Length: 409
Image (cartoon, rainbow, N blue to C red; front, side):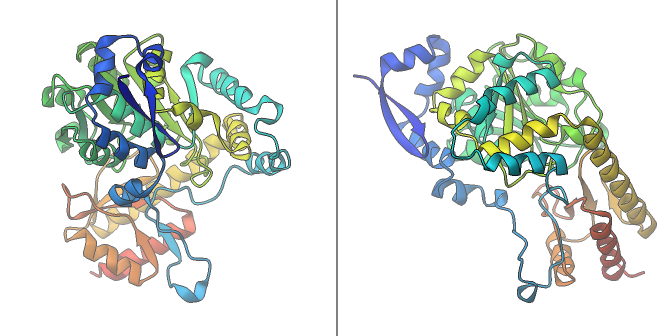
């Protein structure tokens, strides 16, 4: 029996080759799984199971949790992890709380299927192209393992969300990082991505980008889809899409077999700790992601979180209000920085800005924390620039006060 390895809730499981063939009968696609050794599959198990491997290679994904005991810390503002400053939309929270009473059932009132059909209606995507996950990290990790390989690398920009880099490195997948530049208004150039590796297996585009907040025009993504290798996949991470009115890459999905779009309820919807995410793709792409026993990850979703997520999608006026409130606060912060003569990267369309302190960002972050404000980190490519999450008006007023104290005239 030829052994193939799958991941099931953090454990490696051996299955017969015939079972694999029912998932992926295309020999060209099957080579992706054969590129990974037994040791690499064991490592992948740790990532997908959120076990020790996950915590070791992705420390940046572990948010610094606010401490409830005021005596134990002087921190009063956490604006470092791009969390929305308040919880779920109130109506969504009420629905989620009510659903807890049905938590003795695995799928009360067929909630899972109802949620998928709600997403289909709201986003105008066929239900067979939608999967729900416990956040968007899981499908992101699966996509790297499924579509990139030691032979077919990963391409991203720099800086961007680091998880793809770190997972690829962990699985011995080559990564090309294309620096963002002022000439491109710090937005992703898909032509530069393709030039960096014309034979990559996966091209990762975060739009709006984390940490710059800059969006990739839809025509850029379409150009990449039209010009990349036919068997390569483009993954568009839209974790921050609800903070902008720009069109979504879902408009390009149709019946394509080379595009994946990821979403999460962790940002504007204020559900970071509740863990609900979405992937949109042709069923054949989803099947390739399923080779790591994704069935459990897509079916076993917390029902109260699912109910809250479903309700959130049905509240467009409240979504707009949150977007408008965040935008107003962000613009007020940018105006204050301009008055102080402190540079920041222009064009953010998300709940973050990149501030150029003109000195080591780590030292500036330490100065802020001494004054009760935790700001975000920097990326190695830009050692003097910190990501600052846009919090509430009150939190950002405190941030502005500390800017004035740290950067005295």
